[in-house]
Length: 289
Image 1 (cartoon, helix red, strand yellow):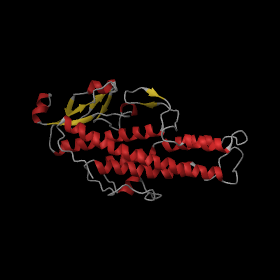
Image 2 (image 1 turned 90 degrees about the vertical axis):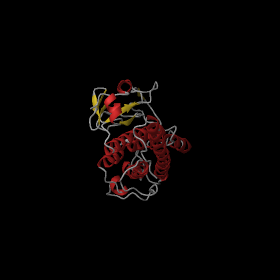
Image 3 (image 1 turned 180 degrees about the horizontal axis):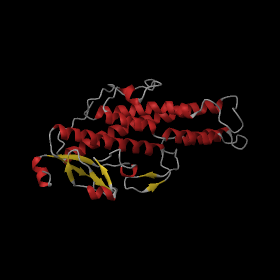
Image 4 (image 1 turned 90 degrees about the horizontal axis):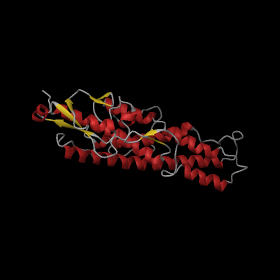
């Protein structure tokens, strides 16, 4: 199922389609996150139940970062499928979400999904490179390496469940919210939702500009949500227009549109803005010739 970009010149239509797109990607990311954390919990429990310690104070096999990263590939496949199958695009994606067994060692997410569009390939590469699996591994590892002489098995299991719960498991790190401020300790679910929103925005902008170009419209306009969570830099650029193929200056950075991956993450994370196309009359009114 694909979202057809019906009227890229209509702010209302673009706002609605952007919301539908993000909601579907968010749903798939939430589902994939639950599967990921359940699988990580299983291998962590197996490590806890293993009869032989590798060394004093060290986790038991098979709980390794490599094992978590292999599970992460299924998350990337699912979110990637939601991204490429929802936006109107010529990439060749699977007809349904990939199963956990779909991932194959030695293949990238783009290869597993049959993606060839360079922008989408780079999107999937970014998803694969995210450090969230390392953070999840570290969080669970901190439980497994506790001194069992001081902590009961029941306490360890409860701590492990809490560490890998989508809503309660947290990593302490500096992150950027929609308004550009720093916070600490967001849950795994919030972080997965941030990933989905950020990449949804980038991909929606990319394919909107492609559609604008295909219809030979001369200009594009940046549109923000215009609420109190919008970054100051994005509020400043709201309503400005440039020629198709040119860039907006946002917070001092050149961006082709909302979510442009060449911009710093502080200008991309959780962005909810989108583009609209400008026909010849609207472009002339905006000063574009």
